Length: 214
Image (cartoon, rainbow, N blue to C red; front, side):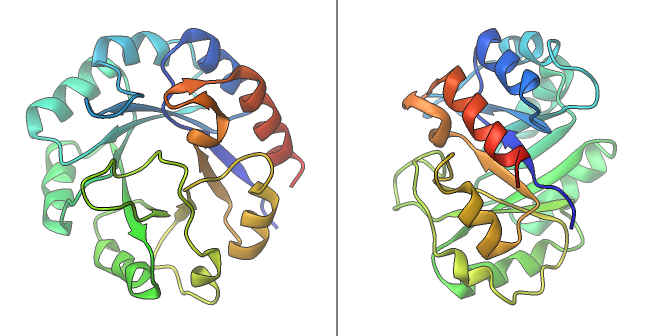
């Protein structure tokens, strides 16, 4: 069985980026969404991305972004992957891919019921990876709220492409999450924080050490 890898998302300081790098994160994520407590601007992200070696993926988390923001995030933020966390349709992903063919595209699919999981199939031809995340209440943030969905909804599902698991995952439940879903890439944000938007270097270390043991 392939090892489990992790992405630490919503990073905003050199110290927390350093912790993610030292303890083996496969990807680091930066949030570009003003309503989020984890929001950074492209210049901040670019400085933080420069701390990471080339083998670590640099992911921009965006919510229904326009082309101007995407262009700036790629140029200044130095990311190699766009994680689209809004209501982007497959056609929008196709347009982004045509504009930026060298950038990987991940699509977050919010899950509360099995029908939500099935929605991933619509992105088969346009997304490089599907991120299953908990569906949040209408009018709240689209992610990063520590909510968890019923992981058994993924049991027996034939995934249309590469995928990852997110939503309320921390050191205490990551082993169970991986065991139930079979996820090989797990995304953590609120689960490694001491307060919303405040990453904790000790929690990052503990989470990544647990992931490395799976």
